[in-house]
Length: 155
Image 1 (tube, rainbow, N blue to C red):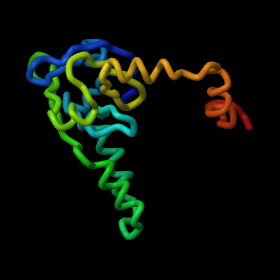
Image 2 (image 1 turned 90 degrees about the vertical axis):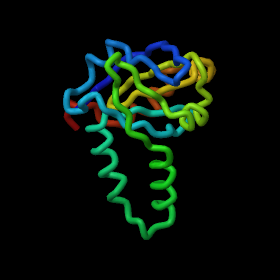
Image 3 (image 1 turned 180 degrees about the vertical axis):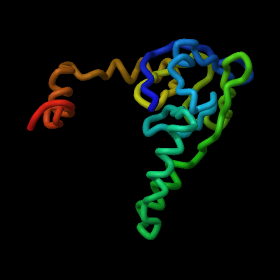
Image 4 (image 1 turned 90 degrees about the horizontal axis):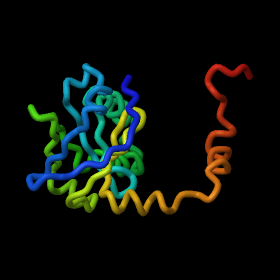
């Protein structure tokens, strides 16, 4: 399983390509074979999944009961715009114009990598998102994680 970590400021070139930083390429599982799937994020960003991770997520989504209307809606929104991408010989990804338009990305990009994904943000939108950081991160951590059992702890 991939476990990305890092935050990287990048530039989009005139053709809509972004260089995947070497630090991220080193974290890429060989199973991904330098291939990704990009789709729309829940916020106004894009999400890159290594191809092997996408297949796991996609299999879970495909298990949803399609006779339930909300499930069908979710499936449509989730897959909307999903596109396969591959690193070129220079370590760049060509981002589709329609996806760049959705995320409002034009030049400066932040790649925020965590877990099995890399979020692709317009730098200004990402910076604005983080200025709305909660005053007390400890309170948020307690609310989100405080009730969850920490791995390795006895009950």
